[in-house]
Amino acid sequence: MRSMVCRRDAVRNRKIRIIVRLYRRPFTYWYPGTDVVGELIRKYGRIADNGDFLVISEKALATAYGYIYDESSIRADVITRILTFILNRYVWGYLLSRYIGIKTRQLLLTTPIEVMARHKKLALRYGGFKHFIKPVSEAGIDAKNLPYQYVALPLRDANRIARSIYQGFLMRGKRINVLIIDTDRAFRPKRLGNIVFSTRKSFIRGIIDLGGFGYIIGKALPRLFKVYPTPVAYYGDWVSLTTILRIGKAARSIIGEGFGLSVYDMLSKLNKRSFGDVTWMDMNKITHYPAVLVRVRVVDTINQAEER
Image (tube, rainbow, N blue to C red; front, side):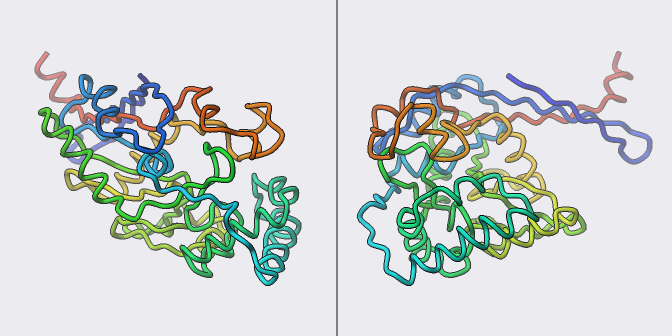
């Protein structure tokens, strides 16, 4: 369990204290066909309270619900390979990374063009050109924590999945809020609380998917934005978009990266030379944390003092 305390002065000299506690439980890898609702209830059913937030990684859900694709089956055409070389290798890898800072620069410079081109072609199919121009994790498609050349696709029914998890807990007497997030960045203008620019699709009102253009704007003008993981879907009590963003960010801090920030981190940890050497059995060689329980409590410190 991890806790954070934030103090805030309210009107009429009243003082409140916001207490945020995060609970993290280890899971085995969620293979395709995993009973996600059952796993979540088994881990968090006893400690969850009404009003808690269960924050879940979209990539783990995508794998469990079968939203995966084998990119080795894709044949990239000449035009896609040329565009991939220009965008990923030259524009992002050599030019822009020097000015806006890209953690995956080495990935862009060393990954074979054919491999990147297959990924780009799939991104173009799922998200269109605005996602094609993004350097990594285009259209919310991610290759981390998967074997061979499988990638996780974005959930098309994220709202339904969030609702089914909510109902599963409700049937056991727990009314919790379910939030699905993705590590892809979302940028909220500091002077606008109800609008967020994301780099992938979201089902939450107020989040505008700008694809690669959102990534460029957010990275080029960091002083104008606050950065959060992207909330993909939410089901539960009404809360503001700002609250959803903050809950997601708090949970993201302890959800972890699985095998690492990139597929090459995964190869390194598994001591494998190529993606073809990574198997499904390898996925369970580390502990995974795909879901975190967040508890928010507001305490009126003035009233407490008077009661004493």
